Image (cartoon, rainbow, N blue to C red; front, top):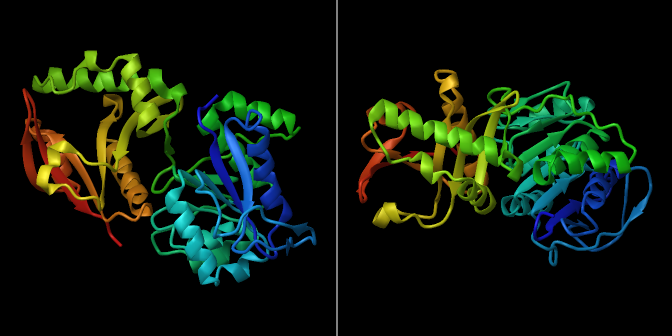
Length: 369
């Protein structure tokens, strides 16, 4: 069990594709552990009947007025998406729901709705192969269009190709949230051959960055302990201590914070967390128009390969997607190399905090609109 059930909202509108909607709906419903882990429901702007592109009459469970706050938002495609992408009420609603959600998934031409909602800046995106040109016309210049894949994973936003690819993307999301075993069991119950070999991409590289799960705890602990050992051996600093990273503290870290990781094959090579709440060390400099990146660590085996830069760029896009305008972080004040690195990445020094036996320099970078 995952604890409190995550709310999964599946949107509908006139001309939606039936399988775009029903495929991911059934994946999460079957994966729900009898409703204990996922509560799946439909929602539309208005609580009235609409017809799918194939002529099936659909009735939403909720309207925009009474829709529960979703943890997971699914935006299906269909011929009707070409109309709804110009409906400001729909795209405004999608933008609002996505900012509240932990994860947004578009299926097929649902990508057009995400584009018009302003959610794809700086991300990788895909859609139905027959709608690629329309997607190119709809996204900002910073969006990377990816063809020939079943889905792309940007961490908090996943976009799939056409129709049945939405089932693959939904199973991928279940694997992220509830473990691969749950996803495989769900596919078996649906008697569906899950396409697990399709690449999962994230701009600007092919290295996926995703939310950490309990299954990552052992590897994450090893990564953090390794970073602590290197900091001590290279700089004589004990600001990060190996003994601080017990399995219990790492489990709690994943369970209570927004922790993200990136892998190379089976190896976890980088991590960081994003905080939104008050941080004591910032004092009067604190403000809530920022995301605060913590515990950014990269395996020394991959030094010089740009992993840290990719993590920061991804974090910036994630923080932007939450409506914030600043990326902030703190850095060990007595680690000159790391301070030079953050300054080279465009961070401005905002001050210094001196704690008991440790010090941190405070940095921020404005997120481009």
